[in-house]
Length: 440
Image (tube, rainbow, N blue to C red; front, side):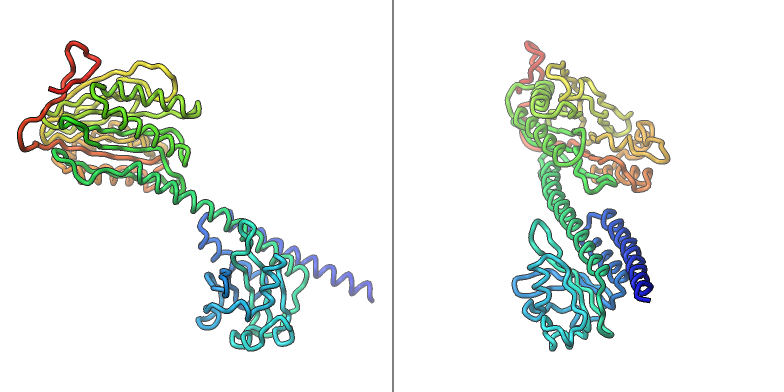
């Protein structure tokens, strides 16, 4: 009979461990599917409470003098949702010190429990497990039983310990992701920042994130003033994603800016310098496409170098759309490459639309949005203000992709306006030295 009883006990213990093991796998699956700490906590609390057949559960942050509930399941509003002093739950301090789950089978007879506090909360039995992030206890998982004592088995204690370890790892990953994402977002915003107003210019811009919102992209644009009433206009796309791509994007953007202020340099000269810097500072697999132009706001002359970038489009009122195709190779791949200058004009009220390849490479059922569809779209956009134009283009490509862009999209629309006041110096190619610009 003793042997039969022991076998039955072992069988029940094995069955319980199998059930709790399956629940732990379910919790782990839920954890790895998210990088949102709030979502992780809400999911885990409910699943852990259900597996342990607890009446209520909560995750409480550890503060200097109190436990502060942040996530709760099954507990009515009232004492369960309020912070409580650390001194009132000595058993939780044991969990903090040992870094393991602590069980209280009967709150009415355990010396580690403040009877008045537990009576106010209506808790009759409880298990608490610490959540450890970067070597420090930052919170704890509390599972409460409200209707009577509960004799915790070793299988249950092991389950709570393992569930807490899984939560701790997930929180650490989520916090690391949130920290990196904050850094990346700050850097991305800096790369996309433009002046609020530039005389002689009306412009608008949009950055449309891809579905992979956790990653920062390598798309960027820029508009900045130079001497003699000239303007620098840039759009580019760095290969890759994440912080590495954003850092290299910043390098290219500010290299272009730094060399654009030097007198006598053409767009090709400036892009050539950006190529050299990117090649020397990046990994061998990193490269970028860049369109850089210098616009004379007085007469509309536009000198540009298109280094492998999708062709910007000029929308001219009542006339055919003009494209500015690539005249040079992409940058960062080879140290010494030929880069060329081209020129055109922006008449007053003409709009220059610059974009990255996320526009033409947007997909629906495997089919690209493509250049022809873009051309048809732009034919319907004559006369729109820059703000309206970027809204229309961004909306059209998002609708085409069903809201699931697989690449980031940067858009910049620039309209040249008539400048009042006396004529200033204008941009001209030096006829005695065609490779350089001069002002006159």
